[in-house]
Image (cartoon, rainbow, N blue to C red):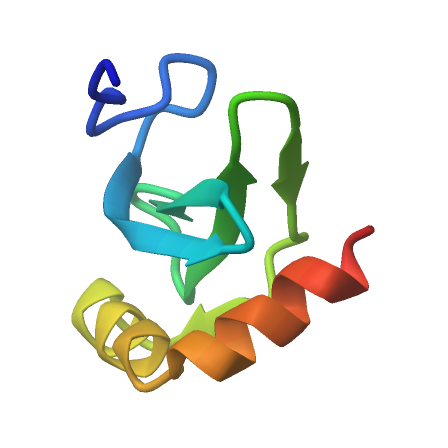
Length: 87
C-alpha cells in the first residue's frame, strides 16, 4: 500500500490527523483550518481510495489552538457517525 500525503493539495491548510478502518475500507481523516480568519474555522475531509467526503465549516472557535483541541475531543465513533452522515 502506498502512503497518502499528509496534506491535501486541493485544500491547503489541511493536515492528516489519522485513519478510520472498518470492513476492509480505509478512510484517511484530514482536518482543514481557514488560516488567518477570526474566529477560527475548521472542517473535516474523509478520503478513501474510491471517494472523498467533506463537511462544511462546522468547527468555530476563538483561536486555532482551541479549534484543534476541540477536534481532538471527537472519538473514532463520533468521526464514523460524521462520515456516515455525509453519505
